[in-house]
Image (cartoon, rainbow, N blue to C red; front, side, top):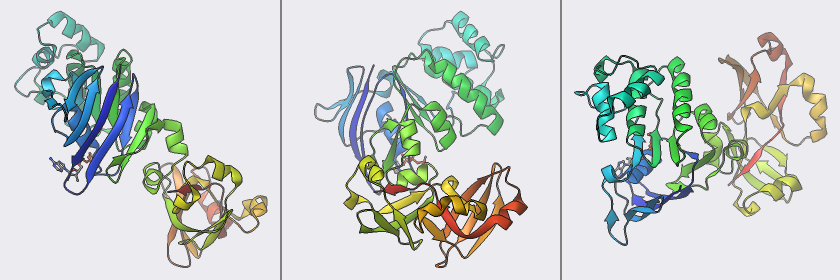
Length: 356
Ligand SMILES: Nc1ncnc2c1ncn2[C@@H]1O[C@H](COP(=O)(O)OP(=O)(O)OP(=O)(O)O)[C@@H](O)[C@H]1O
């Protein structure tokens, strides 16, 4: 079971370049808005045509610019689930699914409908279904066509928050019998972390190496990857010597260990920025002693701060002398009044990432 995609396509403002190989697994493609995620899926599905390259699915060539092969979308055996489901509005649920099967097997469809909470809805038209029901029909229709690969483009974005989670587990259940490649595009970090096994990001038009999801989330390597995984405190750096970098925007020196250098996937010359997750910042004075071992390194001095109550955390936005801002997160169980008493004028950085 494999999907090989090696394509280039000139878009309005940049060249999209994708080189990836999937087996029986769920890979998530993430990236900023407009980075080319949907275009990548459309090229695989055959709705858009790359300028050059090659796409194959289980050894069937879907697209090959050199040999002028460009299979019609209907012949690719690629299931594509859009954000807006695109059911045929003038067909009932039964008809929508049967047309994808290529034949009418009402008995089988009724079993599927029952299994996915759509019992008695065979004769209903899409207009009369809720968002979650339409989503289930679209998923069943996609699977009824027996695809050899599935592309999911923001499949839950049109659903209410409480429906999203149940649709997500239903989708995972449906996919548990699907031993073929799946590509999943979503803006929602939690969703990506739960569903995907590996992740790749599109940065400046280029798909990065597709990495294990834990590694991707815990060890961002570039500024874009850092922002995508929530490591949103970023500063440019200048090397002072082999073990020290100056974070320019924060006017602070950070000590780089040999271990960090060994773990780098790039040359230290290519390090341009430093990134810190909001949860890796210690802001309370009571903890200061334990971190004094940092010996005046990995400390950022602040001028002022504001505390904003978020749903799950306290967000502390700290203003620096040069007016830049650093965000720290504290668990919700920290009392707000304790918080304000304990904040001093220094932030202690527990962990930071060197970014290229
Ligand atoms: N047919 C086309 N020809 C050239 N460029 C296009 C075409 N369609 C879209 N684009 C451009 O391609 C870029 C990528 O669009 P795409 O929809 O793939 O982004 P995306 O990463 O899916 O964004 P979002 O997360 O906002 O959905 C956009 O800048 C868009 O203007």
